[in-house]
Image (cartoon, rainbow, N blue to C red; front, side, top):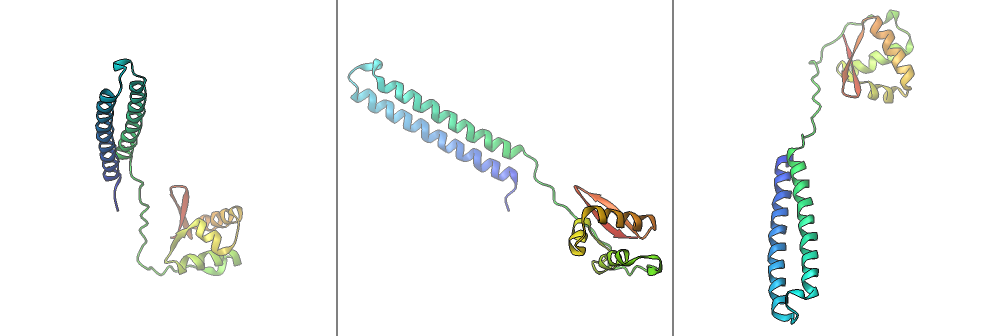
Length: 157
């Protein structure tokens, strides 16, 4: 897997190669026009060559800028989730209702931690119901929610 610095250098290298090709092509075109155009420096082909040169330089500049942006951009961070070794949590199920038992049971099956969104999907419940259930379980000090970016990880205490 290539990182941003390598990709940026690759893009800038391609930009430099294209720039060299542009200048070689421009030099060759000027030689050909100089040898074939009978009007001298007032020949209209020189205007065309200048336009092509400046448009090519602009394209090379864009390629170099894109390469520099990629080179200096920060790579995406990887989300690392550390879970505790499979610890058996002793939970008193007597004070829990049916939905709360389902939540705790599902978290236990997942080694004591899981994303809140995954919990909602597996239980097929909405965001509001999930929040209320987790609030109740947190108040009873059975679970704890930990913020991870835009999501929560629900962990058994």
